Image (tube, rainbow over all chains, first blue to last red; front, top):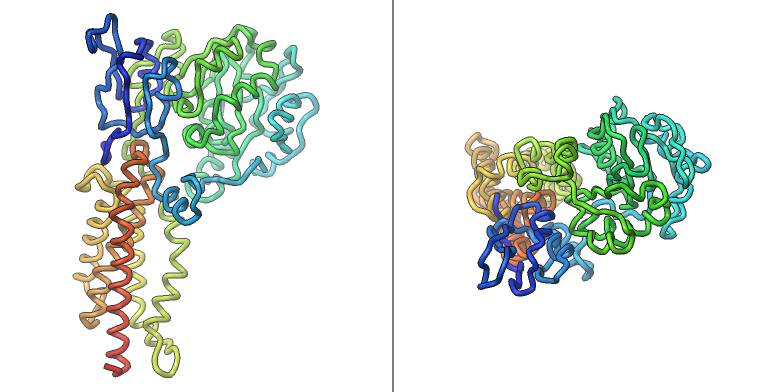
Length: 102
Length: 379
């Protein structure tokens, strides 16, 4: 299933990529693949193979050791965004916002 | 009942070191919880051993999480747990302290000797907590330190749930703790195959799905919040239809309001049940559009079936404008429960949908006002 604007904020700087493949391990939608001959670079590098499947969860950016990946991370949740419009705060979902257990 | 057992006092020693971590001292530990089957001695003190079989009360608790706000307070104490007879070189599986997450993990570790490290995610599941950052690098490193994990299982692999990745920088954890860190599969059900393959996940194991069953189990928690607002809606409808020049007339309220109340139920059904279940089969990618179309179809069916009876054209138009819009609004809320919507898309939807919702509500209110004024023979 695909959604509108799929992965519009996902950016990959090929020059910084070391080809470690970590993004492929953490991406829950198989957005990346490793290919050789990317931008004339030696060895295999990550490429965005299926941008429109990206849900902007931020897993790749968080785990990219070379800082090659960036994305405007956030939860695609309407009620979180509506809440933030009303309260003026950051969009966080109301799911179990209570602090501490019991 | 399991929830009562969860608030019993902690056994001395076990989990004690984890309790003070990060200042978020947890007041509860399951002393006699039936999923604890004993303790395992470690250099950091005794660690509770957990069962890998879910009991009827575990399953009942997990069921209640699917159908009620019970899920908001269904947690286990953060800390270290044992499965089987783990040793210093056994794998460490990391989980959230939402009991449903914890149960899902332990039920798939049968036959393994392993450790489970439960992070304090405030009772939220792994993926949502990772998005919020509570299932995060800092909490993980602090929990490893507080439980003395390096001394207990220093030679084991730290296996993170893949869906924890938005919150955890695995490289940093490796650097700061010296542990071998790897990302496990998305689904706990794939753990045995993942371990067997030497901690290698296939492309399929790395991919989140959103099949019919996944969507179906989520639908009760879409219907429930929508129905929470229904009493207020019902009160307004009955008030509008019952209101006469001489006060509220009960008979008018019911005879005029009832069709609208039923259409209200139909739009909740459309937006909170039909849209989630039929999601890939409803045209357009926008949830607002999916909801509006589904609502319109259902409402038109209702009207065709004679729901509005001999009502005048103004309330019929009001219904045709308002109820598909309500279904659309409810369907849009489902974006928060799916596995594939992104924030930039939802923002874009809201930009168009919110003004449209406000306009629809205003027009239907105006139509009802005209209808009432006619009824009162003011115009």
